[in-house]
Image (tube, rainbow over all chains, first blue to last red; front, side, top):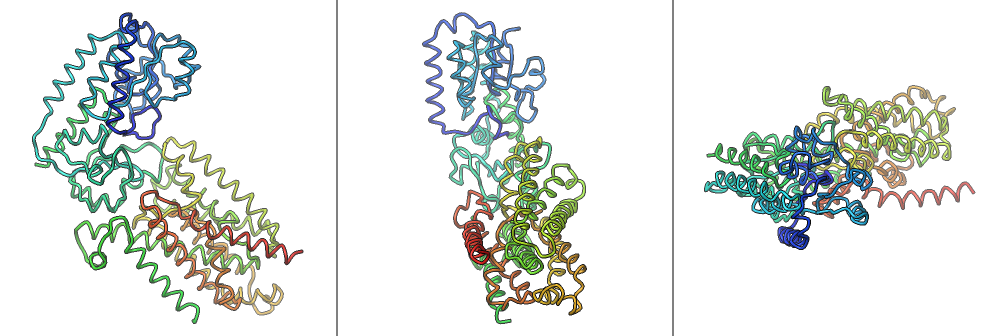
Length: 287
Length: 326
């Protein structure tokens, strides 16, 4: 999971997330013209909307995706993204692509978004999802904005079938998400919900964390996790990532299962099911 | 001895406190048992793999910095000579960062302390060259400021250009220092260099005693000044270089500690050197305990605390120097 990349999803309070989704939905209802006539040139400037747009777009409709879409540590659709020119989210660059619709996240550079709006470009901002059951709404929001409601419904149906197929009634076992600098996530995050659905009890949530925060290595060790999910290392060296090789964690790994979170954990898209399937397999391996 | 015994007791007490204080909130008896017991259990893991290396590194790095400060001040007969202030620590940090980012440290573990040692040695040599054998205050400080700024800028540049997004955020760690989440690996990597460097510096006591009478007097007492200088450069480079390689550059310890202890040491470097090593260890252990007590989850940097004590002290010194020079 890439917790630092601009434009990627950040853990946030579930309540606020739902309110924002509702708001986004309202905005779309209030702009029927948008939904009726499909925009011909769509530009996405957020990693998560990039992937949903690539899944939903009609041929030729999507003009550009963000540069993060081609980062294998953040994006589940690197191969697909290669077909599109990348943007870096600057208002100038986006405007010169003459978009009819710009897709952005609610945390995407607010200065760029408001500048684009001032220039008369339609910008739809999509909030990050904080639970698996918000993903269908997310797909529908992007689908409606792009005038691809039918494709969105098909994708939702596929997602819900996949989610149902991965349901488990195994009793929860202790798991921890552990990232560079001892960062972990607690309640109200997509990663926490993935763990819960896969039959795990998230130690970060147990420690009282809502959203993200640091869990000292000592407390992780004392919580005795049976499964540790860490992140893939970036190239180059950093002291922050050293913690993933700390001997105490290595000893813990010997006792616990270990798996690595990847790009599938970053955004709430149908690819999140792959992350869930991986965790469910890890949970079954504990039996 | 009247000075060293209470200082030793203080270091032992702080070392024990460093072992017993931590976010996991373990019981006293439980932690002590786990420290000496062989196998298994999360408490054993916390005590032996997390807290013990942190306490050992606090002890060694503090001693290395305090001792290096006292030795440099003794040689240059200048109260402002301190590894952090005159750019030795930041040059060591540059060496360490280059070893890490070039991938050298990953392929050959000893490259990390060795590169930091090389950075520190280059800085000490440059300072001795620029400040001259007498080490005039102005020349020393100007050379130190320039060297610190250059090394810090190059460190920031290397970290900013790293493909790793975390590296850029670690600039503050290399400038301020921290012992959070260090492991026994770091102890094994740095301890031999720090021990060798400190052993070398401790042999300088008699020579530095003689040097307080002036260079001619020292020479007539049979002190080989060029050999003394060589041991000083290598000893400081090994001690400070290894300390910075694993803990980042922690400032002000080498400045504050010798000054606080000088009145008790009777201005004799041979007493001041071991006393400063113990005092430095005590100060760094105390600062590290404070980072855990003040903000347990925020990874407060060591340099923040040492500078809070050290900077006002430094200003006070400058004030006194001004009066002396006027």
